[in-house]
Image 1 (tube, rainbow, N blue to C red):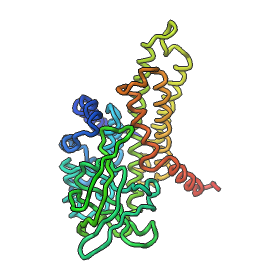
Image 2 (image 1 turned 90 degrees about the horizontal axis):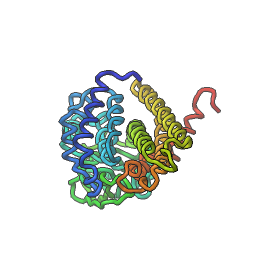
Image 3 (image 1 turned 45 degrees about the vertical axis):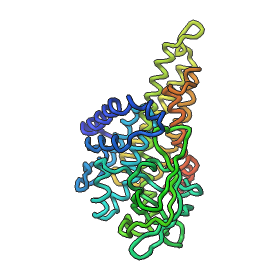
Image 4 (image 1 turned 90 degrees about the vertical axis):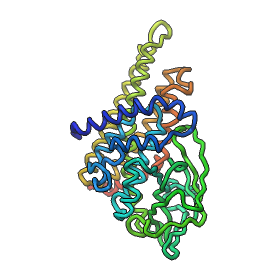
Length: 383
């Protein structure tokens, strides 16, 4: 895809912000298990970075998804995975359906302040018994008078402890599993909501919660789009989430390979640098080649998505590849750092912890494979 000067300007702005306003605080935020999301998101909102692809009428920049992808890739200069992931939830995971299908009232009252950074958003899909199997969720929202009455629980909710609102997927009737779900804007200060912090092996600076709903009431006007279309809307949101995940991995992968080259060039063992061992040199060359192949796949999918094409197959491939390559790259690079790679404050060990989530969140590898297999059979000339 041919990027413009405006694309590069956005990337430069994101990189400067991360280097100056985020990276100096990463060690403290990782230790605390959270970062000041309202403060950081307000800064991003003031820079106009939270609504690049959203309508100008509600505070966005009115650009296409390629600009969000450029931002996602630029976030790869961050020294941890938790902060970029939290930003991605705000920009590309909890808000697409609201921006596309929400009423003008909801977009004015919820989307606009979210794009300004005055509100923090979270996405409520996963549950203890329904993660990648979205159709299996059990949370209900029953119509009662002018309200939805919500009961159930959500699990693994990024930004869940601090969010002002949740894009909630719930069963709104007892019909077929793919046609009985709706997306609802849920204010997180509504009575009946309780939260529990989840402790993770990585992504420490990103607060993650389990949410419990006990007869939570929200107005029926908080419905996003049409009742019963929630599963379809969420599948659309997943496409952007998966493209975002792939794009956000690219700079991170390059950065880790660069750091490993620098370290192995300086590190001496048996009378020469570690990098002078052909097995090391060749392995890093292989990994760099894999990153470039992922970059080509990801940006091809983004270009087609911007052109209005269905990229479910390519987005699933990119998500699958970035998750698996991240695991492979982190393990290989950590090995070449030796004992230093096993220390907690090493950039490779940081990604070793953080990057493992990519093969789970937003649809596990096995789900991506199932989607790819299903769509392969529908291509011309395929059995």
